[in-house]
Image (cartoon, helix red, strand yellow):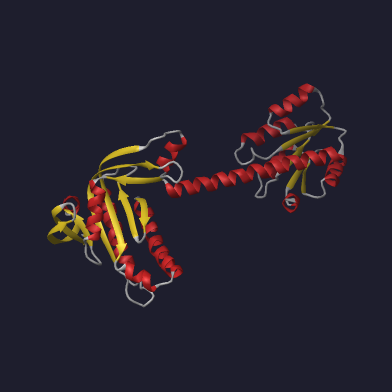
Length: 345
């Protein structure tokens, strides 16, 4: 803490050189700079390296200290810099006016050097504590957005207790690595995680690129949805484009033995319900027959292929090439006509 305090920058604003000398010597433990009038003070405050705290005289030629403080607080870039008035104007009305302009403290001349040091230290520590809190809040926000879509996180922060939304039509994608179980038995845990991280990081980038929503990973399975939480008409196209790129990105990837890695992808289109479950380790999830069907399209698909339902095929047939797979028996669904997505026209 002491080392960080010594790195703090203090701007002393006063038109009297003797006051600048006294304050400069009193605050020798900090990095100090000087401004002899209000205009220079504003310039230094808006510089590439702004001060962490400003000691500001009130009675200066031209722009007085109150106006300097008002302007500092009116600008987003400088409004959070603590301002301490150091002045001969010691009436109650003067102090009240100083605090009204946004100052954090008010010291009257002649001042006590120990008091100046103590108050400067206190306000610098308060500023550092606020910055630390803001950093932690920012980190918490980023972590929350890694778990939940931004729109859902915003609703939770506003106090919604139950979030469950109906979506009449979305496209769901499941993908997993072929022969993952046998692969995992041949690799060390560290190597296995490194491989999954590499593959899923590629998938994460594609999700971002195509404006989709990653729902979760389960083991080697990766789940993505297009069309929520913000509905979009081209949800099937966006998911299809991602699926084709996922398949392409897998080319050239190998396991520890040098064998090519293959991915199996399934897609289905239809209605779902999406919402937040849990109260402690909550998560955003999706439910419905469409989800189950997409999972079956993946699990009963073929290595290196993207299997889609007839509903998805009908949405995409005009813009993509397909190979009919025909009718297959799907667990818990019976007979279904499916297609392999090949490429974009």
